[in-house]
Length: 230
Image 1 (cartoon, rainbow, N blue to C red):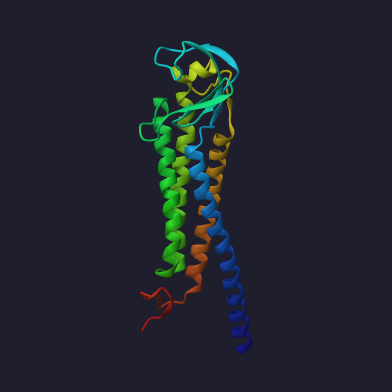
Image 2: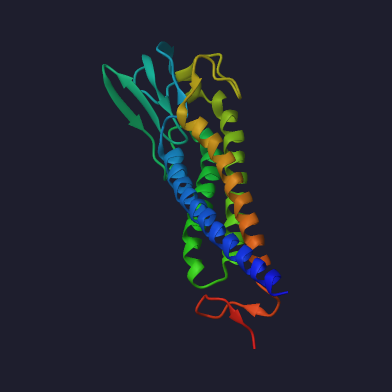
């Protein structure tokens, strides 16, 4: 019986050590994911425009009725290179100059808020049981992945807007970019969905394993450390 108890204690100690290492890796990846979401939202590099001349509508992004537009645009900002200078227009507050991307911007912004919430929840390790913290973060990351996926799904629906057709040609329409191409920020947003799903799955696994380590009758005190209940 003693040998079995020693073996169980050794196994539990080794598991706790490995769980802490995996948890530290998960926390680091969560922080990196938060930075990735900020980059995805603010970078006007979701679509790359071509070096062709298009006729702009009267309320177009550029002042001239006919210009050679080379640049890129994102969820709320358009950057055009003219005469060697890069000029950007757009505001996150008003979500201009492409109003058709408002829905996608809101979904990506919600994903960013949820990711930042999961990052802030890391501080709960000092006040709550690790299993509870992992599960809270897992649900936030799963919700962030859902919002990000909706944003990436809705974003191509706005490609038929006059502002986009002015930069991507008359063949541009919903889910068809015409002469433009997908740029790196949109690819990074898609990778962020997979990243959030992996992190959420890992957090659920770590949370369930942490709960399995606690015997019946154990509860976290206000100080955050687990002790036997009276």
